[in-house]
Image (tube, rainbow, N blue to C red; front, side, top):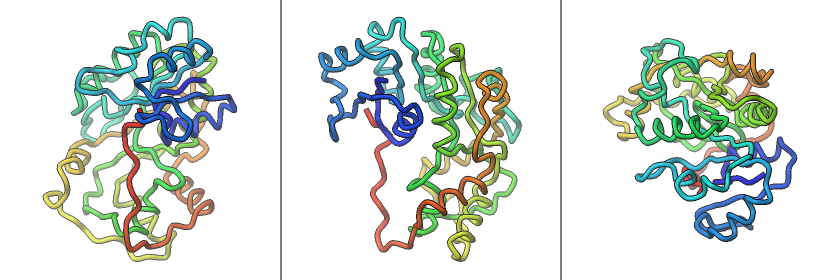
Length: 271
């Protein structure tokens, strides 16, 4: 398998697939190929039957389609997209038949559509969490907050469930698939549950005005993501159907402890 952007979710997918992997990062660290090393990338692509793309679009569009599209012919291609393409649904349910051009990030909307047109398996993902990257870690680091907005809900997915869904799609037709858990919930409910698992008091309330522009954009959308198509077509079922199942599993695997300095955040661009 060849992976464009060997980051958090992609590594879980590779582990679940049990396949030999060659991947890119922006700088070629840890034995990966530097994304812009075109000779090495094309050579590795030629030897790969499956290609996974987890690089977000840039200001000029989707970089992989721009730089390497001709190398993808005849291969299984998966693209990790976002349920953000659906935009705000006022708390309603959205499935793959909903318009996917209403998200607040036009470049992501366009990339999602371009990969579908290219014949890829497009996996639309909500908030991703798992070991080392969950509400448990944010609460322990003192970075979590509550808003008091209980009727605004979000969908989530454990990283292991993403991996299982992608592997299940190896034998499925190209299409868009929502990989989300079964129980959309408010952010407050999730961080309160995480705090309880850690034996800590719930984090304080924060007004939306006090949040960063990126965080305010997050709270500008309210939707429930339906996963019925992935269940029907892929035969997939989330191992962690609710955030409670998922956070308990993460808690059993790791022991986040309060830190004096927050851990460095991973780059969102694992090119």
